[in-house]
Length: 243
Image 1 (cartoon, rainbow, N blue to C red):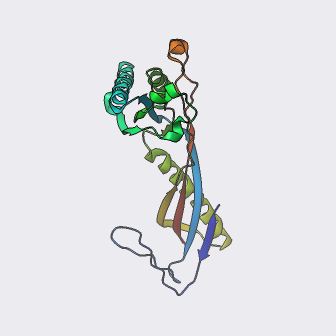
Image 2: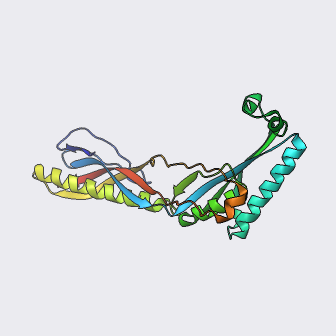
Image 3: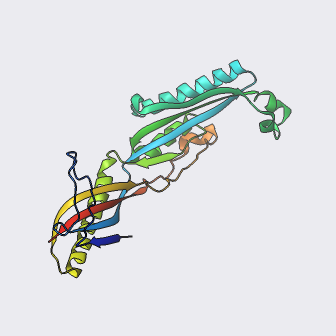
């Protein structure tokens, strides 16, 4: 949506900061201006992924649960690093050891309840190129990451699409200003002031995956995951002189 207004032959002074030197734009008979607000957007396929992986392990007591959790935790880390994922891109997100609540055991047999008195939960985030997300998830799940799959899509250079959206919005504002100047029988002058506001991206989809039975995991192909298209938009407020 584009909103515009034209100001001509006004006796009111309207200051607007145009530089760090605190210059101002004065709107009067000698200095006529057109102010335009315009919005534009760009879309691009994400080139970076932040994968959320984690697991939950149980035990009849806290020590056993911790031992089971330690085994799974280290197996996941080893599987990721063995797959060529740099360790400094794997960051801890959460870890806790807690008693299992009674309501979580309602549908279990007495024998199962006895083995699930305590639980260990741990999670990480892994940053990587977007095309590697499926492989990393596959490796982690097969190593025991049974609470995994959320992916946050993004860009290695977040400023690039934002700058492109702002440039398109400014170009749109300039075109509208030219149309307004023509309707006023005037000639569009130079750009006096511009500001932009990048709009937040839309919600990014999440995917949750649970590990399958270990006996068949070596024959399971990675999930089919494609990088997400992301939209960035920017709103520009521009003031042009008219002659």
